Image (tube, rainbow, N blue to C red; front, side):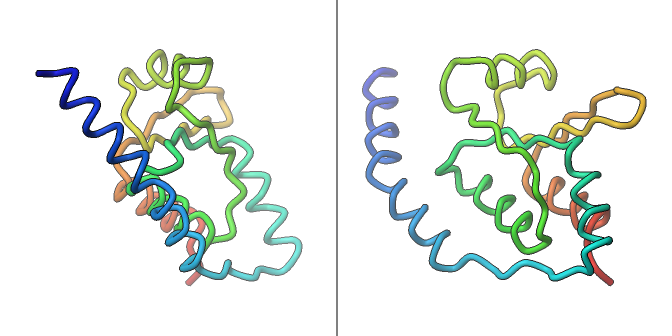
Length: 130
């Protein structure tokens, strides 16, 4: 029974995925325009961030929308299949749940932030414009 359920959801994702991506592309927000110095400072801060995601995950799309709206250049790491990004996500964050934002501070310590709402709130707090 379990393989049948997995097959059903895999097929559902295969069918709905392109429509989710198309909708995301058609409704993407415009990014914030900052002065060049301010954008360079934001870009320097975002070099310490990485978002582990699945391309068609609705919660990941929500987080990527916030990143685009705030004009953030955060490295995207696809954790959908077995590989180095998924292994790093499980080793660092403890579970293969996405979206997950890896935050590396100046001391080299890493914080793994899960849940799209928590990630979006953190991004707004750190990079939002008043």
